[in-house]
Image (cartoon, rainbow, N blue to C red; front, side, top):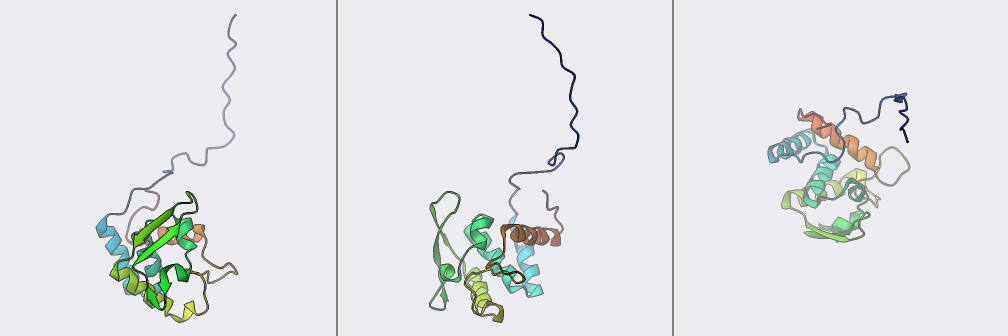
Length: 154
């Protein structure tokens, strides 16, 4: 039985991921972490500095990080040294320690006037949502990376 060769079909539009680096990105080098940390400290961005430090210490996914409540990290006006969190994807508990530098920045952020009456650690400032979204977190991280001169897609 002979095979029938069909003509090649050309796609009508280019694939959304053609030429893009998708998936997991390379981790930041220690000097890049410190460059971001120093820029945030000099600029006086308490929320971003606390977000960055907690992200580095916890190694949580963005969706789990933005949902952290103040009570997860702070108890009786003191920042916990060891935190246990349930991951939303795997439904498994994760424990991590917060370094001294992170505890100091979280304490400063919680005591700032913007945090009065907030339930979540990283509240949304503009909309009626209780905390920043994962997409907003991604934009914030992209801004940090471009601020130190790296390509955000890499």
